[in-house]
Length: 126
Image (cartoon, rainbow, N blue to C red; front, side, top):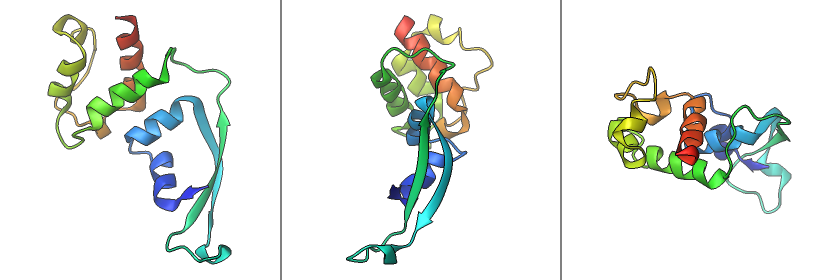
């Protein structure tokens, strides 16, 4: 059970740091809201229950989840800025050239979650 605002970030189609990390190893099956009147004392926020199920097979091989946290932290620390300067903090020029079809003028939330998983794999493998 999460606060409704946090649950929306986890389930969001416009990717943010929380949804990228959560969706790496988990998928959500269903959700429902819980009224504040179900609790005592009554909170000021609505809660949401999400059924999270671990994925059996993960498409991307990330050895340490902390590396994914590091990559997303760098990119989303200034989420309104373009990624061209952020990617230079993590990778050198030769490594950056290996990213094909990457728009360096995009913002972190414009990129698909798969980019972050690939970038983390690439970061771990040098």
